[in-house]
Length: 368
Image (cartoon, rainbow, N blue to C red; front, side):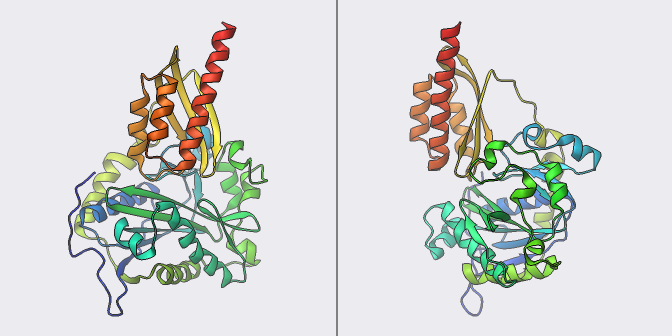
């Protein structure tokens, strides 16, 4: 991660005193290049070469998996191949999503200390309900009553109409959301294959029953661009910024090309080679499903991987932790997790998994 430097590109007040955010509608619909843009802007905000930005976009049909997910576990890859639906790994956490031009996405890029201080936010997770207020207000304009569904969703009648995720990158931060306006939910249900644990506490058994579009809730087709404009107005009002139309800079475009060619367009980014593990166990946390895949040598963790659709904005925290617990006993690993800088729900879930792993391993040793 880069060492940040203060520049004139940080919060620049408009005439009425509200900080300006560049409003970026770049028209990029390719999902691989889309994520190259996302990472380039996040890096740029951290480094001081990109201004605070609200990016809006719609993309061609595709499946996006969370950065901690395994595509073979969460996506019907045969359906996607047969229907020319590309699959790409996001740079942010959360679950697999199906996107088409019936949905729209937005991303807010900013220096987290500055915006968090203005909003009175202490923990990053506090931003989810604040942004949800803009989603709820947008739905209300169409006579639809939406609600925030912790941690990161908004629902209509208990069914998901909006989801979001966050990434922290040194001083940079991005909050991203997807709004289902007229998405092909039948295609979504065929493309995604989530764990049954994902729905365990929601009263649903499949993707199609879990989601709803705004058009479905209203009972008539709703123009996606219209919803996007109204959502932008509510976001700007709730977060207190002035959206000012702008374009990508030459420096950003060069970084986007590099990230596209060296990372997001490469199959190994989305489909990395993975070792097989003898023990694979899962649990549900408030922010998603966690899976612990591990090999034990006696009571010591030989190899370990944590994957799933849970929310963890600082990816280095998980990477550092998994490296630290390798070669440790399960008791030592639990102590490291207890002290580590993880969100409380992820910490508690991981501690449960380590305890379950010890019980399972003990039972296996007793049987042997």
